[in-house]
Image 1 (cartoon, rainbow, N blue to C red):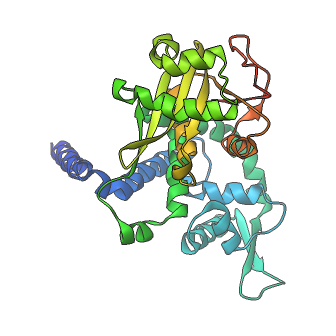
Image 2 (cartoon, rainbow, N blue to C red; image 1 turned 180 degrees about the vertical axis):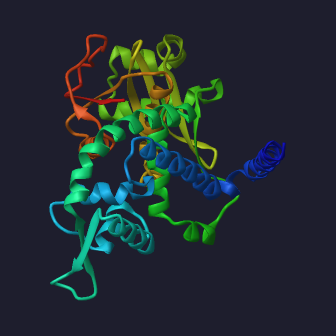
Length: 333
């Protein structure tokens, strides 16, 4: 009975700890990331053992970087490549060396650093690891998308924000209110759709809107919402300063349109946030493609679209191509 009692006590303690940590919400953010990471590493090690391979999950990033490098790398180069700390990389490299997977040699160009590369054993190991990584990838996709269909992009955004402004910097000018928020359409926001996107289009088109523009700007509920689409607004200090419509084209495709951010709210990444919300909502609806129409003069917007993964394309049959459209783009989700 003792092992059973011990198991029950451990489980009970674990769940109490889980509740305490979970109840801390954002304060325990890093703790929860670490807890998830440690569980995945432990399970990953079990998988390698089941396949009879002497390899650790914690070695993956460094091994993968080395196997895909055409030249030996220093600890600093590895750290820069994968975004780990110098000491973490150094410790993993030592483990790889002990396992006979990596070798460390003096750097002929810099006596202060060492060159790290894979041994013949380490290179041969790739053929055994690659099929397992494919299984890992499929399993992790199931696991992570259970949390949210757009989990990878959410992680990318967090990663980007941490790099752009570390926590230590954020705490210097912390505010209890987040001045920026993205919200769905509600009746009280309807007038701002025309005020924002409508006035912009009138200026760009010399006061002459196309029929679809007139209908959509005055009746967004009918054109977008009733057809299975969405409408988002970005608020800055509770004031609507931007918008975008997400138009449903088919069961598995959408088009975003009427993207606009007012001049006095630019250079804050608000257009990016609106597009990212569109991508997230598409993934939540199991969409495969997201399209857009644009004109050749909007070069700055094109750079943003390419950066987010959009590519030039042809119009799908479901799309009503506007007369002013000169360029079509899409992203596969």
